[in-house]
Length: 259
Image (cartoon, rainbow, N blue to C red):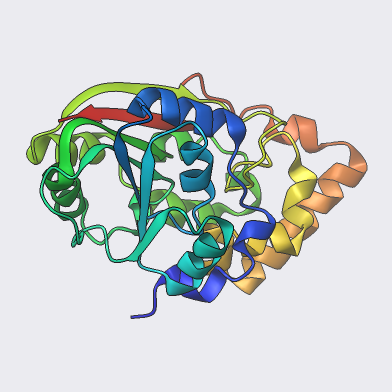
């Protein structure tokens, strides 16, 4: 089967840039050191791999999409980019001092098999996931305008319990889950990046690089949702519509696991 991002990844870099704040936190949590080696799993176009490499260390990126890896290699030929799936990593045991995976675990066919491979190729170190959790997604105001898309998206996203259980089942110790709150300064335009900038969703280029819109939203729901969103923005009722949607648990989360 063709990887998802071979079909939607050709314009990915137009809106999916590494957010400096997220990259900084990933680097801190994974413990970047100049002499150490790190793996970015499901790296896509390498936007975060490249940003993390700026903090130090020797970085490797692996992904199943040839289309995205070609973009990654053009961005930084000094990083080793490898075409492979997360559940079949072409590296020797204990090759890396840490690993990251950013906004990708919902594309893994099976969590434990991918996590087991990361465990195998890690020496001693942390595996840092940046992901959305279904309970967080239920509080996205996008559900008001695109209810079926969001239902499908939340259904596809591994739950907090399943993610932790899968990590623990292969030997990881889950040290922390740190909430992340979207701000209006966010530079990576992923699913809920328009939380405080709703007009972003009216841009077809932004939507094209968000897998939920590209793959899980019907034309009928998309057109009706965009019409309603535009109408609420024009009338000034948008703020009252989205006011009930809020969560103290954050919009996304860093999952910190250690071998």
